[in-house]
Length: 484
Image (cartoon, rainbow, N blue to C red):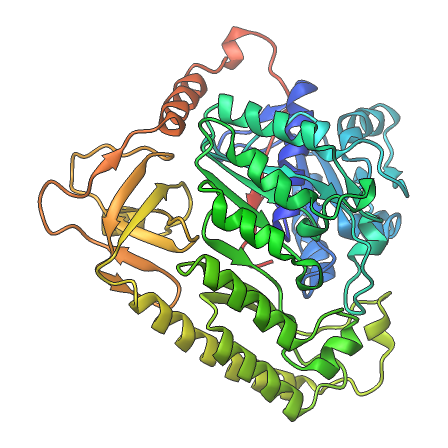
């Protein structure tokens, strides 16, 4: 399974994989040709169309070499393009949207039986994704969707037309899912929503999100709660209080800015202004002084002037973000911004983008260097450090969400899910380094999550082989494409 896009897509991919496993599919071993390839698409990121159709072009040859191979395309771009996908790539077997991902096994079987492409796009949510079976990426951390859809009308965004109006799960259902994850070994959960802090709008409780954070914090065994992404216009003091007063809620806040210019924010239909945004950060830091705050910023929105861009640079200087996801504005067909006059020339956007990235990298490095000599609690993860083997380090996230590479002496066993108390020895713009100064290394706390990882490894080693019975259909499972 190939996943393009945001955390919500990663969560959806886990649900698709779980539905397929429940239907008798299993993960293809590394290097083996899968019988089914699923592409979960994004319609928000730049060049989303090119990524999809470029990937499908590469898969066409595999399909010719292996006629039994099935290719399925789902997610936001599938919801938008619908039958256009099979018109442009007729070797695709199944196209499904954001509202019916649980139908994937049935659609694959129907396509196999009828020997033709199956395209099924629903305009309303069929089943809430979190009620579907799941194939989690790891044992120590889980995604929990608390809402889907969005009631805002940002002029640059196509999400509301693809995922629909906001629909909220009941608090009891969410807490039951978190409890099940913890019982399965997870010590960290991330609550997901397009605007996570507007949770409760559907059942008329404006303080529902803060209450949910507090209730989740009471679950025994849950050590870390994160959430993404809140909307500044709906960010209230009761949520800040819940963050500060619930020990399990991590000192981290990712809150999109998009622009520091009030005139651009108005054109974007973002219902807050820079003063309100900075006021939220000030109140968060008053209650949680060590909070790491991250953001999203778009450069080159239609009509953006140099003065507007300087407003953004000034907010970045004042906000002192730990990091920022910066994007060059690109036209999304079907959005109001695509039809706006005064589209900013590409070369101007590129030059502004480079200035913003340089400033934010400088800010990130300065903020990270302040942590040299301090102790951090690092939840060891898989797949965070690409050079861990060569550097003899393990990687994971500190409580504030920063990436930390930790030196571990030879012969020491530390499992994904365990927690290392490490002292920061060096800092770079995008990560921290913690190398021990003694042969004993840093203290390690073995956790339930690490035990769950051990069990998962043992179970995978004991998986049935072809000699044990009929060979199930194999499936490539979720991998997040970081370049998407």
